[in-house]
Structure formats: C-alpha cells, structure tokens
Length: 144
Image 1 (cartoon, one colour):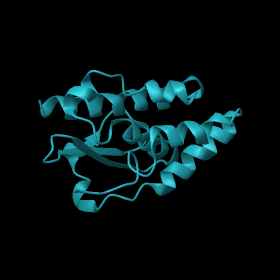
Image 2 (cartoon, helix red, strand yellow; image 1 turned 60 degrees about the vertical axis):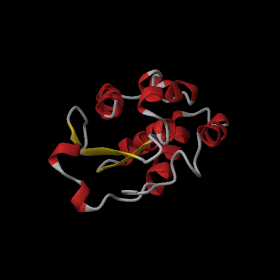
Image 3 (tube, rainbow, N blue to C red; image 1 turned 180 degrees about the vertical axis):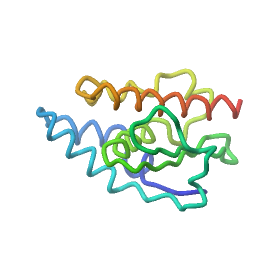
Image 4 (tube, rainbow, N blue to C red; image 1 turned 90 degrees about the horizontal axis):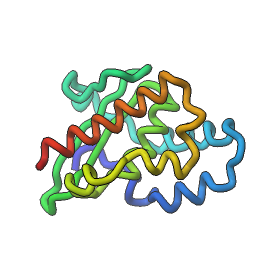
C-alpha cells in the first residue's frame, strides 16, 4: 500500500464525530483540524508528481489513489497548508476503503456538514475543499 495513514482505519467517521461534537467555537474546530493534519504522514517526494497535484487549492495539494486487490480504494495525499491538510484528513476518513461505486454514489462532503466545518470556511478554502472532493470522485471514476 502506498503512503499508509490512519484515516478511515484508526481514525473513523465516528471518532471524528465524537472529537468535534463538543467543539462549539470555530477556533476549537480549527485547532482540531491542525491536530488531524499532524497525524497525516508527509508524502514521499516521489508521490508528489504533477499528475497528483490538484489545481483550485490555495496551497499545493497532492492526491492519489490505488485500487486494492479487493476492489476498494486507498487514497493518499498531502498539502503544504495545515488547515488544508486537516481538511484532506477528514475527506480521507470519509472515502478510505470504499469501492469506487460507493464513493460515486455518496457525497464525500457530508461528513464536513456533520462536523459543522463547511459553514466557517473562507471562500478560497471552500473552493479548495470542492477541488479535493472532485479529485476523489475523479480518481474513483477512473477505476470503474
């Protein structure tokens, strides 16, 4: 498996919901995103290729995927920005280990609404998040 990470495995949607549920202030949610970013291992330079770099993000972001033998998807990524990297961690938690069909049948951003993260994002971060979601969908579409 390329670039393993804890998202979708040790860190699950339920654990994120529990972590964010007591946080009412945006600053606390912001700090939680930074903590998640710190748990994301940096990608090796060999995986930071032009074909894995996403456009439409404020910071440089790389997103890649590989299909596992059982048909499920493994996603990996990195960003130069801490908040964007935290947003990527939440997104990977949502889509990691799902089949391409399951990813395309569901909105990968619903977890952000559950965690009450989308409403406070700046316009540039919101468009970056949309670019991340589109990148996940495109990678899943390529595997069908």
